[in-house]
Length: 213
Image 1 (cartoon, rainbow, N blue to C red):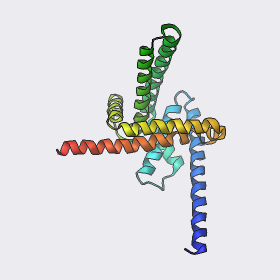
Image 2: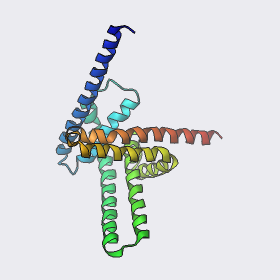
Image 3: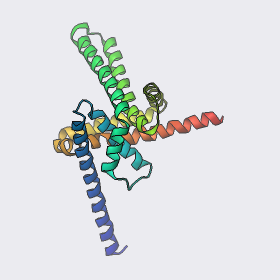
Image 4: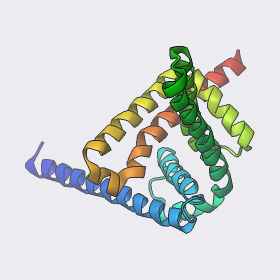
């Protein structure tokens, strides 16, 4: 390989890395802007789903989409269902957290602790799969949650990988706070979308095989 070819590959690599950094920063800015546009409590969940939608379309091969325009369209398109799914899980997780604290302080039962932790884990898993299902399918709230539940159980390897990815990215941002400030939400959602997308595709393949038998 000639020196010029190596130089070109290095330059292309730098350009691609720079583009990724720019895209992540832009998504973070858009997430903040649209969260504020919805007065935070009505904007956070639709803005989060908008990032998921962009990642999903990129995985589908749409490399030339306009991030700002796609974000805006996804925000308005999924506004209602994103808030429904988001606040439902927020309430469930909030109640489970309160129950867990009560159990730890007053009841002190290892069995109850374990049950509550498993329920919390299940709620988190259903939540992360719901994000992708909202943008991939045109389901009702009930069907979105049901699909998320069954898919998460049918592809446990991908579900575990998504959780591990979340832990690793969260640890990275905890140790390097600038990542949280400048790229937090888009960076956090990368393992979520990647592993739930591949898991969802695998579940669809399994379903097709069963239908063909």
